[in-house]
Image (cartoon, rainbow, N blue to C red):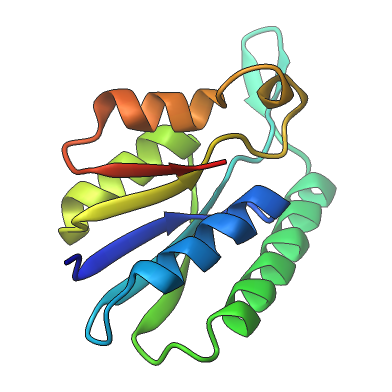
Length: 139
């Protein structure tokens, strides 16, 4: 059915459920890519945009924990791989899917941010609206 599945993963319970769903959908020959996208917050002071080394280190350590978690969750899938990228989540997910020929994007309906608790997450909504391939939103 699908041969190249992209799973957006942010460490939330719903993203774990999305990964489990993708694992069930994947045929024996399907490849699964688990993409975690993060953004390091920037501090704007006048016209300067900066970030601190301590903040960058904090995010780097967090991403290493997420990567370890993903690798543990996909250890039973020889054709799966974990990918971590920095950038705007929806845009990065869409670009990755287009560049890598993913034929399905699996994403949680909401992620870790507070506003996502109220509505379909802004990331998942953006991905659904702009994806060129089918998107499965997991609730």
